[in-house]
Length: 206
Image (cartoon, rainbow, N blue to C red):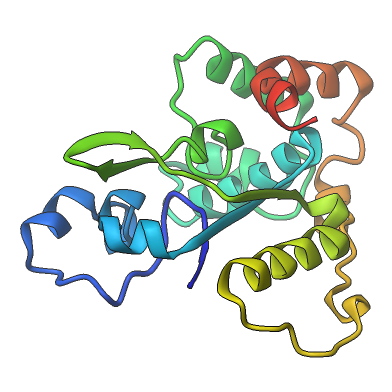
């Protein structure tokens, strides 16, 4: 079975009234990796994809702002963050410094990828890290995902169907909304601060 590693995911196999559900369900009634039982952990081929920390940060920031604007506490906050205007560089810098100094807990869009992939599971009655069979890169999606399929074929013995790997092609470019929101505020200095804050991802995945 396939399992795409993520901190939060749907889990139709779980009894929502069970003790395990009470311990493992988190955001919006979605499941954490603690919802996985040992048979599934041992049976699943677990993989994930990581992304360049800098481009991921700006993309994640847009998602964070979108969610924040649904519950923006006051008009001043709405003017600063909401709509399609530029997000000021000093606001982004303050957010990064808060994350680095741990004075602000980042949400799932801004937490480090290394933290997300260190999700806990219960194995042999003890809490351990989620075992991951393969980690690919979004920037190298086509060949990396084809390797995932080849690994699954090797593990399962089920031959891959004939197909052109290029049908998996996915362009990994910052979308237009991302470019528009950071056209003036983004700078080499700000990118370097992102790298500093997310240095663990750079160490683990580059």
